[in-house]
Length: 128
Image (cartoon, rainbow, N blue to C red):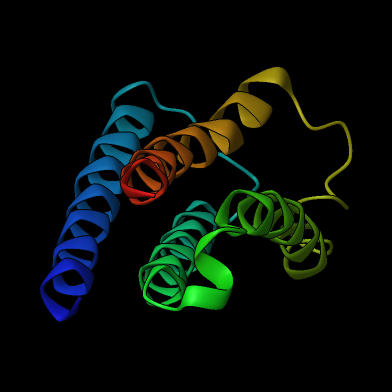
């Protein structure tokens, strides 16, 4: 289990560093200024997705929770969305007239980290 948690940490760290650097570089090359805190959004998704995967790795080993992991994951997705709204309500949701470009740039980290998170969770669930 420790080896898997270290692997998750490395994978999410690499995704965070590489995708944020590429995203920021692309924005600078295209001379686009965002009014949203891009680093904070990437950091939020990094921490929460890694935490979810680590919790699932731990819950997988318990007999009581191992059969309910699919339902637990649905709960974590909803909780992640609500936590995002609470954390970024002042910096993202109070920006007037959020453009489509800014909205698209908000969705990039969501889908990147969600893809890796779902991949790891699917591997955990397929073992059961």
